[in-house]
Length: 162
Image 1: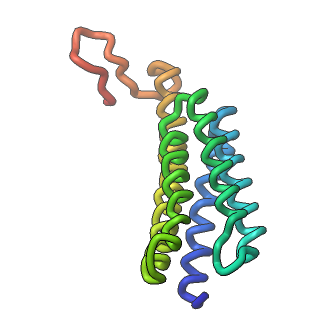
Image 2: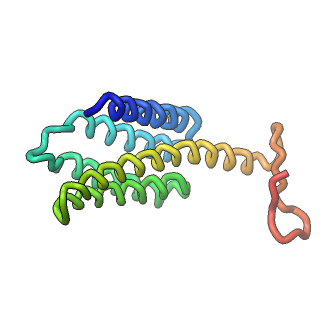
């Protein structure tokens, strides 16, 4: 791995860990459970990386598939959109591992690049999750405690944020 790739990987890892730590800090029980699943999958994936034969990481595929199932089960109970998006992106990144079997080496590198892009999008969903948690908290307060939420109490068509 080149120094540039290594630097990008560590930057993406740091970005992800910041988002996960914010979710653990500000989230509710299901948010923390989902962040814990992602953190555990991330840790286990790094622990068994490069243990596969001929570049095929069967263990990583199993970890990603298990993380997808856990995230989906949590998403069904939590009612949070960030968990649904994280589960969907996890499913797509798990399916990308099949690409090297379907075609040439050049597509395998494109698949690995796609996995990095999907991880960046997953990391962005962590920050969306923090926003969603805070928005739900403001909505629950109904305008109290400094919130400026207009919950649409009048005869308007839809609620608005002011």
